[in-house]
Length: 330
Image (spheres, rainbow, N blue to C red):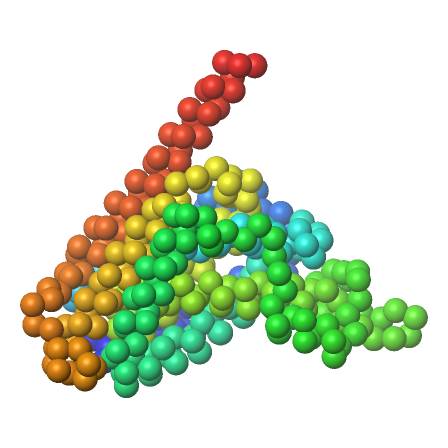
């Protein structure tokens, strides 16, 4: 049950919807490659907006929901940065013109947000009815954390998912783009342009990422409103991060390690919560395991900030040391 006033939730949805409408139909209708200055301005705006939103939530709903939002937002944002590399591969595989990439990301992220919203509702309903699902979520996150450390989760090339493959079989899709158009005509025959496939590739691939991030954030809060807004604020400004960090993603060498710490911590936290509210008959006679402690929300936020912040700082220092070594050898 949400602790946030209904009026505040409605107002939030209206404002966020306005952000996406302006991004798609105003800014997005002017195809261009964002400058570094433009990217920094947009990222700063959305980061400040998230901080202000959390502050307002603190005022209207209390400290606990606000800290849960900040924890969820930082986790989702960090996972989104790590997943930008796949977006770079998708754009390359589909040969999306540079000038159209911003618009493609805007629409793809909007599709992803709608699909994530459905996923969040399903997840919330499952958690409400089956608390033991936290055991599965926790185990999944711990396995994912181990893969990040060992490199078993690396994906060097993009593979089309089932939806995209099925689409290609039933629809005529041309090999060339026609600006932002989804439909084009060649020799009197109507075709869909590759733009449609790219939109779905970005959107559905992001949902695949959500199989990591959604269980993670449910480990920080059970409130679907906080889960959804954390995802929205993480996705806002992601396209600017794409252009700003596209050439630097491979230099954030310690980000996977930081993410593995976060996911591993949340995985353990989920299992502890599942034990604390246990109802499985083969565990402790179907009774809650009373000795299992509850992890306070502030501790979750502290672990996330230290892990991600430490990974970012270590990556920057590593990058500078390599640049210094290269300059000496030149």
